Amino acid sequence: MSHVFPVRVYYEDTDMAGIVYHANYLKFIERARSDWVKEQGLDQNAMREDGIVFVVRRIEADYLAAAKYDDALEVVTEVRSMTGVRLVMTQEVRRAGTTVFRAEVTAVCATLDGQPTRLPEILRRKVN
Image 1 (cartoon, one colour):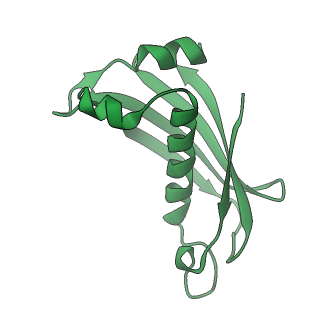
Image 2: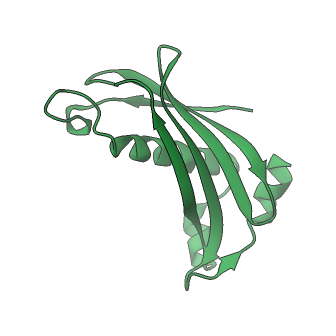
Image 3: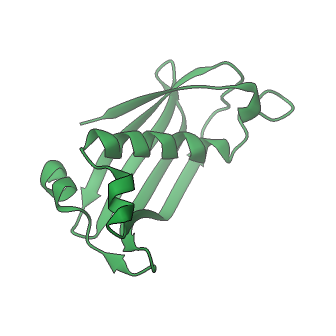
């Protein structure tokens, strides 16, 4: 099941040539993951109050084409695999159906003092 998150490229997202600055793709996919988590019924504020947060452990990224100022983009997120402690997702930033950026993201949960912990049960039930 894919999650689609729309993004409009604003002037602040671009470099002097009007092309999306490379680090901003990470912001786009972070927003999409946050929206996906909320859609799964998880409240990250409540999780933090309970002492658990999501942590990105690894990102592998490929820049395939340039997105530009005022482009309408979509971030498509899909779960690739999940264990009790690790969530691996693929995320693609697309413009008019063409992928301009692709990433594989590994996320885990940790306590506020940085110790690894299991993913929330509600997420494990929904995704598996």
